[in-house]
Length: 148
View: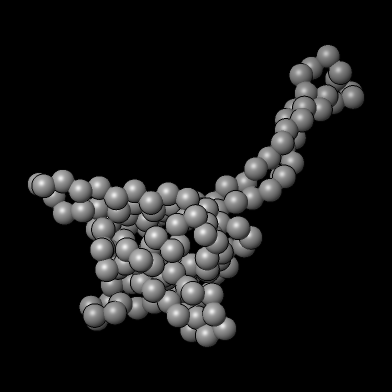
């Protein structure tokens, strides 16, 4: 039997973009979703041998994009870093891990790319701990590097 090699959890880190980058773990963000989209345009072409039949759709790729969303506990210790990153292009990393019974987990690899934090929703109520939802809209490539 063959099973997929799937990650058990993911962590988002914000980079300062320096030559030797300093990474800040977005501690509390535990739910991570990576979305990739291809934009297309479509045309319909008729078969010249049967011109009275409807044309067949042909797709042309016009571009691609990616975004990352994260959710979890709000972390006031990160308020300054999150405020500085909101609406600003920054390098981000998302590392995927397997739960191997250790404190750190086994890193499977890392996605890295420049993104703009476009959404930062914080929610507080007397009955529950604060929550956070963020959206990072990517620019350029989202590069994958497998763990060594």
